[in-house]
Length: 431
Image (cartoon, rainbow, N blue to C red):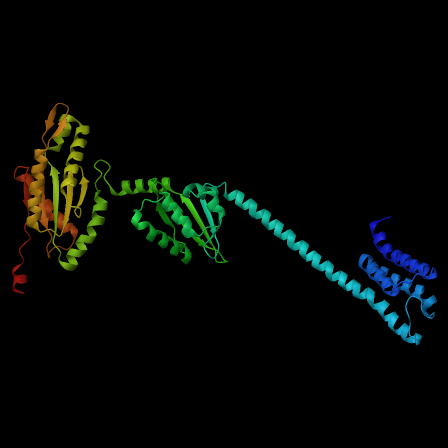
């Protein structure tokens, strides 16, 4: 027989068996305390197992079993003398018991179903979480998940290797501050030891604030890691660490190509003009002194013709190196093209720039370049100019220095010349 039939039949069968057993024991003179309650238990069991129909079938069996003895004193239960009262109490009870039992059964079934569904969802979520964690453990960038109190709930393999996080520390759900201190103690950062505590607190505050601005971290190993912090809806934080060393180096290489002269390593013309904008603006605003030197190597074409362009390039690099060593940190040195150099000197009067130019010319002449077995003597002509109120732009300053350079070439090369500011017109003086 099918399971459905057994669920339907087992309750009435149990009620019949109970009623028969009680009747037989009563006939044998065995005293049974509260036999009616025992029959009611079978009614409840029948309803719980099979439903309302088996429950009412069991109730009917109970009624039929009780009728022969209902009006016989001292059988099953001691009944009141008013038999109508007995019927009024017993029948509603037998009718209501299956309904109540069925209601309890349905509620219990719903609760069990909810619990089963909840358990299924939890198991599915746990399985998905383990899959996600396994996937994150195989990516090549670091991931750390923090809860709302900034304690680490998950640290993937790349983060543990990057920051030297021991398994015991990772499993203890450490605070982000402890992770930072562990990295500092392991020598991960290039910051001085005295500044590490302040650095740790600064990073903790950035994460607590949920600042999502990418931040490049320069490690002691020479690598660059790009850090990102993303705020999660529940108040947690998603931290990622991506090694961008190659990208940063490539970007730096592109910047060098865009801003520096490949042969000499000093600024090129375009970047010089960009850097010179600030000193020129300060001159215009505050009339801060500003001077410029324009250098040109003498008879450079003959050097190329005699020794070749390789030696010519070496001469240019040699002169650029001398200028770079002699200039101040605030001076801006650039190769303007060919064998011409420009040196902008902020906060410098024309007289001081002239003296420096003479010293630079002498040093270039006194430090020849070794070419094979001979020393190649190098000379340069230098034009010097100082900014004045009559100049409308930086181009005017450079033009005046170019004119002074032309004077130096015209006067025999290997010398320094300067162009004085144009005298004010008579009308300007009168004003």
